[in-house]
Amino acid sequence: MSKRSVDIVVIPISKPLLVGVYENGKLIEKIEKEGMTSDILPEIFDNLLKKYTISHIIYAKGPGSYMSIKLSYVFFKTLEIAKNIKLLAADGFYFNNSAPIKAVGNSCFVKKDDIISITKNVKEGEFYLPKELNLNDFSQDVSPLYVLSPV
Image 1 (cartoon, rainbow, N blue to C red):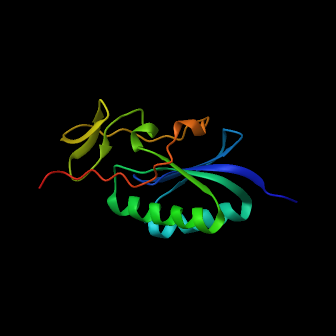
Image 2: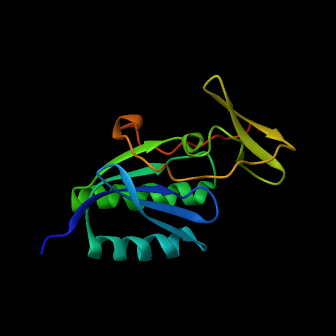
Image 3: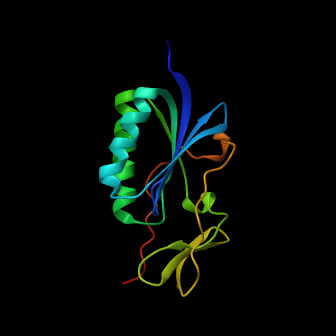
């Protein structure tokens, strides 16, 4: 019996880590997992690869936790090469209706007119997995999006 072909969305830039499984553009499975990205990402994908044939991985490439972004990028690029899975990306604002994203301390990343900056004392938004997936919404530019404050 052949495995079902799916696309996977991963939002690794906040807690909990969110993973969505999409078949024919429709969300069919949602995974929320707390923990270190380095520990939980391999575990989640081990299970997904046993259960499905993955066509695309789409990930939130930042801004957010630098370590999580770095680990996710290397992990997904490895899968792209080793398993021939197409990698796509979007900035994190795509997955939270352009709400502020947690940075360090009481600061958040905000996006206005396609410019990302850091501001303090604003409430961060919540991330969500889209109910429907349109691959045309995502970029082939999968490089991590690091937003560093001026020194």
